[in-house]
Length: 94
Image (cartoon, rainbow, N blue to C red):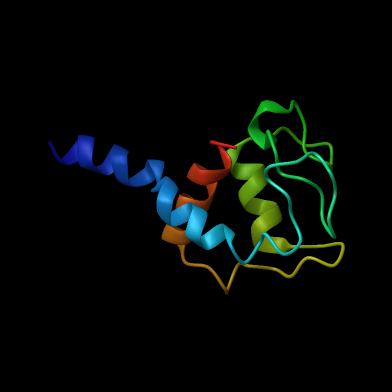
């Protein structure tokens, strides 16, 4: 039972991730491929690579969120681990 609960925890909460994404929406589209200040995140996990050339996977997406860059602030100290996990869960749905 505990293993199943743990697996669910690591998956993230899509609704909470959508709420967390609201602060990202000022610079990133999710419902259009058009760029705002930052690139569109529509279909992010369906793409073979991120803009930085790395594979579109949790580790690389989380690294970009944490480090920021090209005008994007670093969120390593601004988001909790849970918020990042929820955010990744949401990004997988767009």
